[in-house]
Image (cartoon, rainbow, N blue to C red; front, top):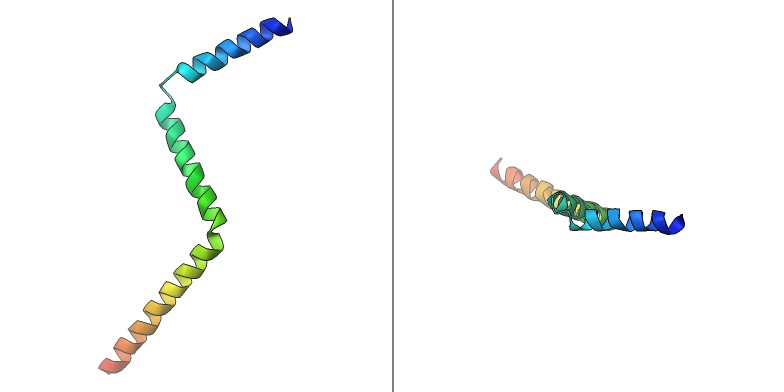
Length: 69
């Protein structure tokens, strides 16, 4: 009984493995998952970097507009 179930399961897995229809979708899902994981890992660094860049833009724009008036 268990061997029959194992045989059916392994055949189903082999069919899914050989089926090429969903490979493009699977690749896209894996790429998105990796990007999300990287964002979660480096979230603090990304937020700090963006805040620093926006702060620099704000400071430079204040200098520019204060020199013109």
